Amino acid sequence: MAELKYMSGFGNEFSSEDPRCPGALPEGQNTPQVCPYGLYAEQISGSAFTCPRSSNKRSWLYRILPSVRHKPFKPYEQKHLTHNWDEVEPDPNQMLWNPFLVGEKKQDFVDGLNTLCGGGDAKSRNGIAIHIYTCSVSMIDRCMFNSDGDFLIVPQQGKLLILTEFGKILVEPNEICVIQQGMRFSVEVFGDSRGYILEVFGVHFELPDLGPIGANGLAYPRDFLTPVAWYEDRTVAGGYTVISKYQGKLFSAKQDFSPFNVVGWHGNYAPYKYNLDKFMVINCVAFDHADPSVFTVLTAKSPRPGVAIADFAILPPRWVVAEHTFRPPYYHSK
Image 1 (cartoon, rainbow, N blue to C red):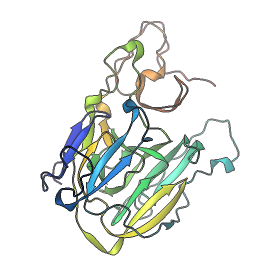
Image 2 (image 1 turned 180 degrees about the vertical axis):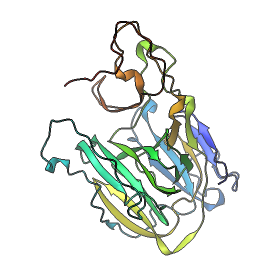
Image 3 (image 1 turned 135 degrees about the horizontal axis):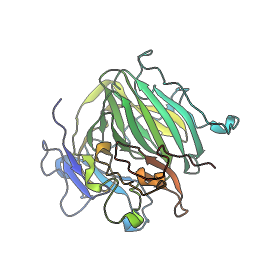
Image 4 (image 1 turned 120 degrees about the vertical axis):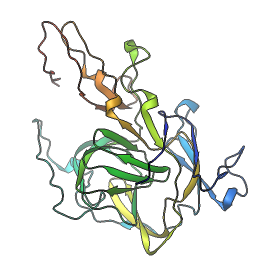
């Protein structure tokens, strides 16, 4: 596998074009009457157009064929990915689950998605879902995009090569990857693979505020990596399958070309990955314990200040020095 290239930074304004097509990005404007190489200009939006500049998420993609050139979507049968948790009786007890077996079925990433739990509602654009994926074969002439929210993917076994409209991302255990809402992606595997997915509806993951910690600590923006532009220009005789997750259900449509035909792109809305070894741990105390929020890598904020829809936190290797304190982490009781 050729070495993949990335651009560093979290939420930056990026600009990339495939080196096979130099000058693919228009100069001085987003939508010229005729784009270089006869490409099609498309904007992918991660926020409302009218959001303040500081929170406006969008990127311009310049592709060989427009993404809307596909046949109508039809329901796609997959019984293990669901948002129907309201149909399950609530249970206030602590729960555990056995590891999901991998390798029993020759299935790809989409067919290997299993929902564990969730809350809220994708239709109202508020809430989360937690899934596990198990897969042993790559997605061949198939891709997926999530219209409900963002996928934060945490590999536990096996590395993933994720093809996106923005470029390629290689994600291994001890790394995480975020595929944001509306972005088409396909997953290649190199054997039995398993991991977790945290899905958030209606909001995006952000770096947590540091508050009294100051300017430095936790996850540094420079350690987040975004792929550089890469495209494939090929037709698929038997049809390329595009799978859409929409309001908690899956739908599929056919088209005769690869969706990864973006020659260049620019903007601040893109997929990214992060190596958890880069996390700068903070927690050396005289007594008691700091709250677990000091281990937050990414947060998905709610409209209520200080309350998150979901936090992704880790407990990495670290020095723990304290006096007159019970060292194992405590639990919050609610």
